[in-house]
Length: 345
Image (tube, rainbow, N blue to C red):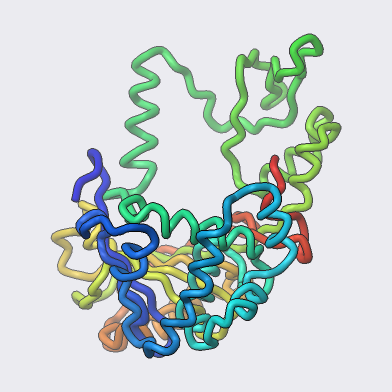
C-alpha cells in the first residue's frame, strides 16, 4: 500500500483495559458507500454490544448537521465534548472504551475539557471522507524519510540552512506591514516571508520576548492556548511479540492520559527483519511520567502494554530510548477551559 516513496498505509486498532475494542480497516480497500455508511460499517467495534453501538446514531446526525460555519462553532464551542455525548444519549460504555480514548490521542484533551465543536468538525470529516482517513506512516523516521531528502534537494538548488540559530525578534516593514528582517544570534537576516514551524511553548516564549509580536493581537492570543506534556519511549524486546496491527490507540486505564503504540517492525524498513520486537509508545497528558526515572517508566509502560496484548507479559526489555517533551502539544479546549479551539491565529 505504498502512497509515495518512503510511506505506506497501515491498519489500526484501539484498546482499553478490557482488551481490543476497535479494528479500523484500510478504508481505501473497501467499496465506496454513501456517507456516513462507509466509516460506520467498516469500522469494527469488537466488544461493544449492539445496544451501545446504536447510541452512536444520534451523534452521527449531529456531526452531519455540523456545517463548520461560525454559527455552528458558536453553538457547540460553548459546551464540552462530554456534555455533547450526554445530550445525544451516548452510552457510558461507548464513551469510556471508544470515544473518550480517541479524544485523548486525537485532540489531546479529555472529553471534559475538549470543545464539542472541534469533535463534531472531526467527525464530520471522517463520515464524509471514507477513503481519505487511512493512516499513512513513514517507513522510517520523518527526519530520515522526509526532511533530510527535502533539505538535500533544496541545498542542491542553492538553498542555505542556518542551523543552530535561535530567532529572537523581527523587523516589520511599515509600508507593507510584513516582516522584512529576522533577528537570530544577534544577526539580522533579510526575509521575504517567515514561517514559524515550532511547538506551542517555543512560540509562546517567542511572543513574550519579541518587541514586535507582543504588540500584535493575533499573536497575544497564542499566550492563552493550553499545552500538554508528552513522553515517547522506544523499546527493544528480547523476542517477537505478536502485535496484530501496526498502529494502536489506547485509553490510559486510569483516565488521566491517552497513549498510542506502534509496531516498528511492521512500519520501519530498518526493523523489518529484526529478530526482536521494536516498538514505540507515545503518551499524552504525560505529566506524571516526567519525574520518573527510566526504570519506573519502562515498568509502567510494559504493564500497560500487557493489558492490551498478553504476550508482552513474558518479554524482557533489552534496550530503551526515552524522550520527554514538556508543554509541547496544543490542547484543544473549549471556551469554558480557556481559549476557544475555533480562535483563528
